[in-house]
Every structure is written in C-alpha cells, then in structure tokens.
Length: 511
Image (cartoon, rainbow, N blue to C red):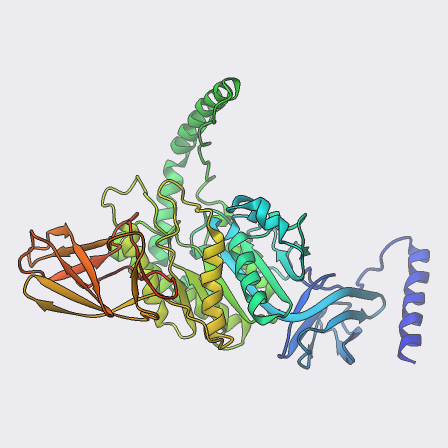
C-alpha cells in the first residue's frame, strides 16, 4: 500500500509538470548534503530536514523507518530517525507532492574538517600523489566539499556534492582530512564520510558565529584594524599589481629558458572581502551543515592569526576556545570531539624575533583546557621554506590517532612526550616527561632543539641526553641554569620522540 501511495504521488507530480511545463513551485527540497553517495552517522539519532510548502505533509523513508512531518509557516520541516545500523547501505526517499530518491547511502562515521589552506591543500598537492592514486579505490570512503562562499547572514544551504573515493576523484580531496579518514577506516572497518569546509588565507574570526565573535573582548579592536587596513589598501593593491606584472615578465623568461618559474605573488584581495569578515564563513559554510549528525570535527588553521607573540597567542587561545563552544552550542550535541593541528615548523622570514610561531604553538596547546579536545604535534614535518608542507599523510595520521584513542577508545598511543616537571642539579637541569611510551628516543643522532638560560635570561644552545624518562640539559656558558626551552623557534630542528614514534611537544619552563 505504501508503494502504491508513493507511485500515485509521483503520477500526480508528473501530471502537474505536463500542465505547467516545469517544476512545481514549492516542491519538497533537501539540503545539498542529502544527495547520492552520502554517509549518515551510525548509532545515533539522525536528523533529516528540508523545505516544502507551508502546511505540506512530508514522508521520509529509510532503512525500514517511515516518519512524517508537516512544513511550518516558513516551509521548514524536520524528522529525527532512530539510530541506523553502521555498515548499512540504504536508499532514502522523501515524498510530498514530488518524490526525491537518494541512492547509495552508507551508514558509518562522519567527521567535519575545516580551517584554512593547509586543510584545503589537496591530495594532488601532497607527497607521492601517484602512489596515493594507486591505493585510492576506497568505495566506502566519501567526501563532501563545501563550495567557498561568504555571507553576512546565516544561510540554510550550501553548494557541494558527495564524491566516492577513487583514483579519479581523490586528487581533489582535502589531503589532511582524507588521510585522517583513511586511517580511521583502516582501524574501524566502517564507512567514513568526510565534510570539508575550508578557505585558504582566512583567519579564525570568519569561522565563528556572529554573537560568539562579538562577545570576544578583541572584537572592537578587530573592527578598528579593518578600518586601518582598508585605508591603506589602495596603495597596497597598487604595489601588488606591480609585483604581479614583474612576475609575469620573470615567469615568461623562465618558461623561455625552460627553468623553474618564481613563485607567483599572492593577492589576498581587499581586507573587507567576505572571507576576512567576522562570521561570514560560518554563515555560508558551517551554518548550512547544522544539524547534520557528526561524530566530531578536525581543524587546521592558525597561520593567518600567528605572529603576535605571547599576547597574540593568548588571544588565539581565547578565540579558538570560543569557536569550539559556539559550534558545539549550535549543533546542540554537547561536547563533541574537536581535534586540531599545532602549527608545524616554518622559517617565516618576515618575523625578526624568530619565535612568534613558538608562542603561537603554546597558545594552541592551551586550548587543550577545553574538554574533549586533542592536538596533533607537527613540529617535525613542516618545511622551512613552504608554509604548506606536503606531508599531510602524517598530519592526518596523527589526528586520526587522537580520534582512535579519545573517541573510539582504541588501544593506540596518540601523543608524544610532554613536559611534566624539571629539577636542577648544579649545572644541569633534568626534564621529566609524561607520554614517554616505549621510552624516550633521539632520532638521527644526538638530541637537538634544546636551549638553556640562567637568571639573566640569555639563551644558549644546550647539550641534551636521555636518562630514562628524563632529558638532562646543560651548556658550558650557563653554570647556574634556571630555565629550558625545547623547539622554541619558528623553524626549530627537533628530534625527541617516544617509542611509538610520536614527537615531543615544544615547551618552555619559564612560562
């Protein structure tokens, strides 16, 4: 009987099309997320929502469940499915005056990945693309990429489509998110759905809900800074255009000589462009995803906010903590897991101090005070002269280890050595670590990356050696040491790991 009713509904809709010569106004619609090849979260209630004519009855059927809803005065409707069985392959139908059929729906684990260009970097730009293509036939791993868009007001939908992972599609996947999802699938053996929403060069403020960023103490100063940036933009744009013209000449000469062309100067666009304005990326690229059921989120962003020393780092701690709280509030799912990447090593020639990113990494570590968060250390896999390091395989794997341990309670080591406390014995300081699983290890020779200072705060490169779960640090020029730092530079050379092969966090004892 149910199938007969659905067929009658389709017949009525077809007759209407013949009469009016086009789609019926007010036909039931679904967000772009609900499309062929989608992945729904398993084991939890799943919301399905959309739009129809106010007062219209909508029937949703999937996996033996049939639920109905009535569109409200604004045309919005929603149903909440009972938990679906992980691993199921289903068809979703939504019936009103018209019938929508969504095919090849999998039930598994769903994660959101967001941030700026290092989240956006594609698999085609990561290490060993040819090799990755060769192993990319993973039909139960899918990715939905949200089209880049900014909006001054919250939007109800976005553009994008689900893609099945295969050799032809994987090159366009977010690399960090893909390698994260692949690692999860290899351990969990379930379908994995990945939702990618990122935009290169963007600071964190555009990714925050408007009321959240407005409540941030630095909001007024942010708006004043925008005014100053706008005032000097015409002169800056003129200089950028001159650089681009010079580059075109250099690139043409390089092409004629069959040599590598120089890097193209970056044109960020005006400072009041939507991707730089508070809340506008949240409005257009995150808000439309709510309340799609997720297991959690991963985040790779910070380059656009780094550089403000200790004060800037503290500011970012506050900002990202607020972003996490705002997203969790708006999803209405409690403290869902939120894992993020600590910025890697990078030379940052524009920073005369040489350590602005060190302070920023400390600010990122302080975000761990927020419940159910984790941080993947990447201090050892950056590239001195490339702000977009290509080893996204390891970045994604380390994020996945955090999820496997913290969310899925798998017996894996997910963190490297972490500073615990220190003791002083004459001219030597002993640094004690937690998370020294399998013992402390110095890769490729003697320990590097340690600095030591006395009460005068003059820093010297240190000699360091492993002694059990401690590292003993000293320097001939510091007879009475008072403090130690590790990895405290924009682009440090570091090599302290635990037996599980995970790197130590950078730290300083003089906080």
